[in-house]
Structure formats: structure tokens, C-alpha cells
Image: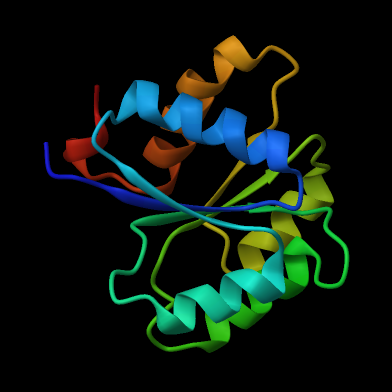
Length: 136
């Protein structure tokens, strides 16, 4: 399997650590770029040579929340085709619909049991694309 490149945008350091550990269980050779919020993410993405295959974006963040960050990502031509998976502790049907309208490809509820996170990440990736390379 080709090496995959992910990005996690979350203002919670622990959540970023848990995410990267879970990701490593699924894709051991994957690289993960991390940003401590939407503003930092947009700056990093403008500078990086390799764009991520998937972006996981937390909703509840200070300064620039996930919805605002998603809107900004979709405005940038080189970024707007990257699947963005919204990542939060709670989603309503209304918020899911709103995120999809803005351009999110899927969503992932942050689990209370971190042992379930790898499986949930993989499921969110599968929902956001039908590429068979992600089947495990």
C-alpha cells in the first residue's frame, strides 16, 4: 500500500496524539501533519509541498472554528478537492447537512473509548471515498 499523508486539525494536543496513534495502527507508514487550529492549518497547507490525502477537522476550536476553516479550505483551489472529515464529540443532523453543503466529505464522532478510534477513522475514510485502496 502506498504511503498516505493525513492532516489533523485540532486545538486539543491529547486528541491529536490519540488520533495519530490510531492512524498508525491502520496505516503504519502514514505521515500525519498536525495543526493546532484552523489558522495554523491554513498557513501550513499553503507552505507544504505534499498535500494530505485526507484532512480531519475538529469543529470546536477558538479563533477559527471548524466550519469557518472548512469554508476557507474550500476557497483555495489546490486544497478544495482534498476530502475533509469533520471530527467532533457531537453532531446533529442539521450540522451534518450544513457541513456537507460547505464541502465536508464525511464526519467522525470522537469516541469515548479510544480503542474504537482506529476502526472509526477507517470507516470515515471509506465513507468519504470509494477507492478500494482503503479497504482493509
